[in-house]
Amino acid sequence: MKTKCLIIGSGPAGYTAAIYASRANLQPVLIEGPQLGGQLTTTTEVENFPGYPDGVEPFQMMDDMRRQAERFGTTFVSGIVTKVELNTDGSKLKAHKVWVEDTDLYEADAVIIATGASAKYLGIESERTYKGRGVSACATCDGFFYRKKTVAVVGGGDTACEEANYLAGLCEKVYMIVRKPYLRASEIMQQRVLNNPKIEVLFEHNTLQLTGDGKVEGADLVYRKGEPDEQLRHIAINGFFLAIGHHPNTELFAGFLARDAEGYIITDGASTQCFSLPFREGQGVGLPGVFAAGDCADPHYRQAIVAAGSGAKAAIEADKYIKSL
Ligand SMILES: Cc1cc2nc3c(=O)[nH]c(=O)nc-3n(C[C@H](O)[C@H](O)[C@H](O)COP(=O)(O)OP(=O)(O)OC[C@H]3O[C@@H](n4cnc5c(N)ncnc54)[C@H](O)[C@@H]3O)c2cc1C
Image (cartoon, rainbow, N blue to C red; front, side, top):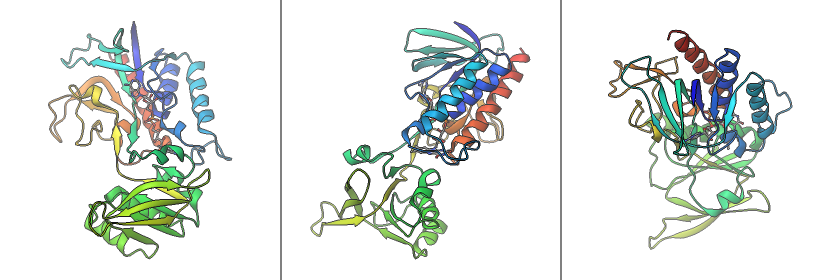
């Protein structure tokens, strides 16, 4: 199948790109991927997306976006992109190729990548049990629900310190559960955490399991696991925030696009234009017709409104590119 504009991903970035691309008459095709509606559908309520003064149930919000894109002529394809062959030879006449489920080939003048990023979890059973009921991977998103309560942040890097400080502004007490005997964060972030009277850092602790009746009420920890002085400890908490990193869903593009050390797609400053390989900082060469929007290209903000905004930018840039052909 041939299309002018192909969008990969059905999160806020993909749907917003679809709304803009379809209103620009590009008749986009959107490949939904493994998680219809994107990461937001793993939470229970969204209170910070403009236009919903009373908050909104995430499935409802994503369905609203989808219906808006549908109204203007987006075609939705259920399936996962398993292979791409992006046109790297600079010829504007050659289309980019995208395969869905290895078999269905789509050829597109412009491709908007909106494949998101997945938060990393510890992998303990009770994380799944309490997901959305005390377990969160986003302090900016969910911190407000824990005002004046006690929470724990897992991780010892810059993000974990940032999240702990942010939560300390809202919560009564914040534990930081750190595997190592030190913080990996930058000196300044460490000082902010260590000087914050609301934050207690639990060095050399691992989480064994979360406990609670239907929602998180506590965590069983182990101090110096496997060492002769190993000790078990229980803390009472209302929220458990993972801050051990994210995994951008960008492996598909590894041989074609510039990505940073963590795998986030590198774009051209304020633009969503992707760079081809080989890539050198400050001397990147844009890959014509390939744009990245949302969390897959955003190691910093990872918020639905920011993803939606970049989806709009990508569609506007794709439209401009297509009109230049
Ligand atoms: C628990 C939690 C709560 C959150 N709460 C809030 C909140 O309250 N407010 C807020 O603003 N933000 C919140 N966020 C962050 C928000 O969800 C993200 O910033 C936003 O969803 C990013 O949008 P996106 O479109 O870039 O990616 P995603 O929403 O991650 O969507 C990615 C899409 O790409 C698709 N995809 C991936 N791989 C492929 C493939 N190979 N082929 C085809 N499709 C593929 C997936 O199916 C998915 O549809 C929260 C995040 C989490 C995890």
